[in-house]
Length: 363
Image 1: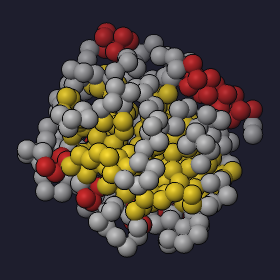
Image 2 (image 1 turned 90 degrees about the vertical axis):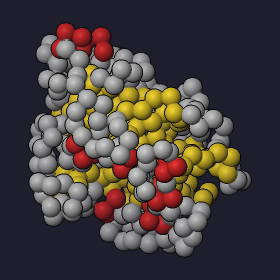
Image 3 (image 1 turned 90 degrees about the horizontal axis):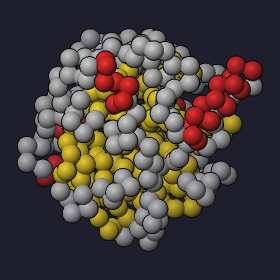
């Protein structure tokens, strides 16, 4: 590891562990906000405030932080469909740690982005500071590949306690653990090989590190969630590649403190919680909500410390917080309406509450 990478890795891990509110080396001027955002003078207190929610606003090509009043208090991404130093294309995942934000620049498939009808790639995992400056990157802007420092549709990224990054490299059919000096030190899935056999994945959509050291993977097109050891053995599985009644397009999963697994069953338009015996103990269907589109395809659901569930209801263009009794207590975005104005989103793919890693991998 070169000295710069070693310093950056140590600095970021220290910030994550301290969970401090400000970024190291931050400049005095915060990034410019849109018309629906708070005045610049209010940003210092609003940024990284407990209770704020960060959202990967996929087809608006941005990651935003919003408060309880639906105001944007921070964002990264200038809306461009061309990846660059101040743009991110169709992000699918993000998380805030300390004063930094980890973002997966997934890219947009054909037909989803008007300015590039054949699709537009990004293929970067980046870390940005409060001022919107990229301080670390894996993958090259607009380059699709599987070689050194190359990705193909990264859909999920997680900062591990050891300072490495766990990346779900969907188009390459693999989950990889990458060091800050860009070495792959662990991989599940055979690069470029789609399947459901030993050490095989089919369009994986996320991965999380569990407290026991295993990796939990949402193997989307295999319609399953699997828990694998570092030796590539599956020790727990829910769902079946040939049965879409159990799961259909497993988009996300997290292991809850009580041992249950919370799963986003995207193509069945529901969130389901199952226990270790694979018995369903809770579910929520987003297409049953008044005003819902027919096929909203929810993509992320995370259990919060207060017991509620934060759901990214993708094509309903909303992020909602739902109680265990299935009552919506917060919604960002207007149901069924895509936009960039006040309290509007466009296919939000991921949302997390700042500092709340319930069921997720803590940095």
